Length: 187
Length: 436
Image: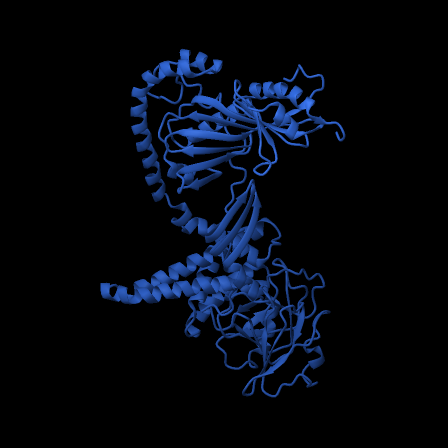
């Protein structure tokens, strides 16, 4: 994925969020009573169903919209979503698996160097923002790929983007900028 | 009713009492006979006992050597005349037990619960088990725990015990000789059988204990005018039960105010003995009597109980509801299908989705094989471990707080009943942790 870098930096995907629709109304009470591994939250109006195999948690709304979180890859998210739809189908709902979309991917990455955040922010004025009183990391938003990179002074990065490819691209984009502002003393 | 029962049994019985008592007036107002209420109570109690959810307590209590020895007037522990040194020289672990002096002529003291068999008991002592049955020992005996299949090891000199109340489970009274191979079985076999005036007793007993009969004759003049005389033996389970049942029948007329519990026991044991016979034939019946009875309770419950878990009436209702719902949804989906068909093809970025959607036809069964990528069963793998463990261990309770962090769960529960391993436990507060 990060082929353009000389040093291979490991991007670890920690969370993939996906949504899909069942195209049918779901009776939350039925799911809560008959489903296995479910948590009913009537105050919010949703049911959480947790799966073990791809370890995912799904929020199920009565409209039939389902948000699936906790997967570690896009494929896993798709598989988990289908398994979930299968579960609902078994409970008796006429489920149609449609509109599957990966909405968010969260990845972490670690630079082999520390970063001088103030310099980094100065260099990338409009795109990067840094408020140490609010949050210890500098936020770098890449507009065209709609990715957000949070840069910590230790060199750790968290990247969020709409899909895995964008995340990888974001890392590649930001790497040279970080490299300029590294703290040479400690690695 | 049941004198020494565990806390759970007490609670259940008190519940039964409460309900029955509060229903009494209502029933009377309705014009229903009292008998009906009594029947209900008996039925209820028998079911509770059968379910063995609480039985173990009682059995354990009975089996534990919780005896209260009532010594005849004038008997003192230090008296050397009676085989006092032999009195309770019993077993290795025996310790002297506390003496409670009762009012009146009788001195009573209780054996410690941890008493190890065998115990030698001198003549003239009246034993009372935890459940209230009384035995009068006329001849020095040794109380022991014996295996179910144990035969009298040797033809013993006459040992006689007799009891007054209806017998239930009793410790095996074995002639002092025997049995070094004392298996520490929790059950104690009722070794006694009733002989004397009952003609019904006869054959079975006599055939197995011919030697005893002789001695009986000797002893007959000695015992006080009790309705029943008893000979002791360590006999196989079936014989015991057989005799016991006859004993109970014999006693039916003699004992006054028998407990309902005893009636139940009688009924149950009559049936268990038949099962016991077949079991004993099969193998040297090494299981303890209580275990055998337990199994029989199980068999009984299978036979008798048609409600409760075996009830089918509720399932039908549940099945109807989702069907209706699904039908309704099916109708909607049928109409929406066409519109969504085109939508699916265009919106799905997934190549898999588009390919399958083009191949799918328009069916009434919207979900199964539709333009939708979700194929029925084959494609989408079901949960690999749908039911990791189907347990019957259940907790029914109220909760104070249930908390989850990631996959760690913490439970603060209150006022509940736990059914674990078939037995019931009641709690007012429970704290638990689990990992999912």
